[in-house]
Amino acid sequence: MKTLKQSLAILSAAAILMSLTSTAFAQLPNPGMTIDPERTAIVITDPQNDFLSPDGVTWGVVGKSVTENRTVANIEALLKVAKENNLPVFISPHYYYPTDKDWKFEGALEVLMHNIGMFDRKDPLSLEGFEGSGADFLELYKPYIQDGKTIVANPHKVYGPENNDLLLQLRKRGIDNVILAGMSANLCTESHLRELLERGFEVAVVKDATAAAIVPDGDGYQAALVNFRFIANAVWTTEEAVQKIEQTLASK
Image 1 (cartoon, rainbow, N blue to C red):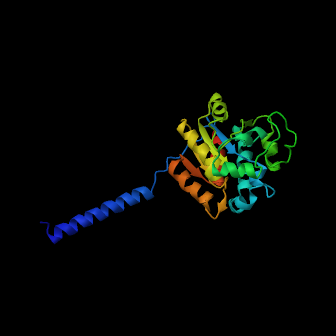
Image 2: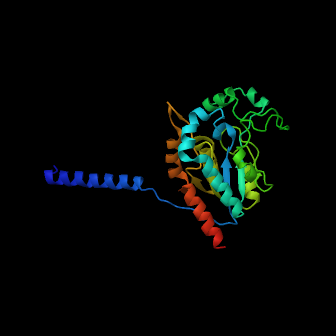
Image 3: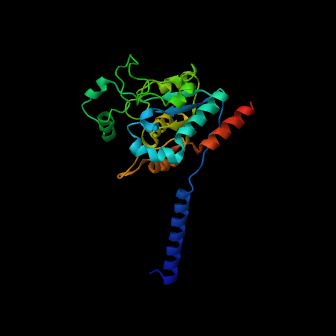
């Protein structure tokens, strides 16, 4: 039989092991990401009125998060520093056409988006009614996006880039490092993060250049922050991202 002293020693060892394990999980590695101007681009998901304008159909649930994070200004800061330093910019937008309303099954947010007319366009081949609509880009961003250099991918339909041409456009330009921002943190932004990582990209997420819905069922932004920390190569603030871009490009 074990003596009391032996039992106490075993319990003490177990407590130390549990403490070390807990500490290891609490102190996740921070791999970081190096900005190589030949291989790095900024990707912005859904920089559109329905998410980022007070007139957008989701403002009632995302407005608080967008305002607190200064998301609109922070996305502009990323676009501005990219253009000033000739860093490629890619936009992955979200559009729905009338034919998309014939889907036979949908997830919860898909149903909601279709019910409220989010990102609706009248036709895939026409811009009739697009200007200033919820699907249109925020007016503030148009000088950056419509400069003839920004790559606007085909629209994604659910959350991730699996079914648009974003990855093709990145690969064709030799890009494998992505600085990721845009809307919405726990949906399209996180889904883009996951797919890019699975396809062999390094990804740094800019955590205050995104935002998410805050509803009685949960805080989408806080949920996204947890997952960003667990799976991204790096998680930066906008200030950190801008400084890293400027410092890297100034040294070239």
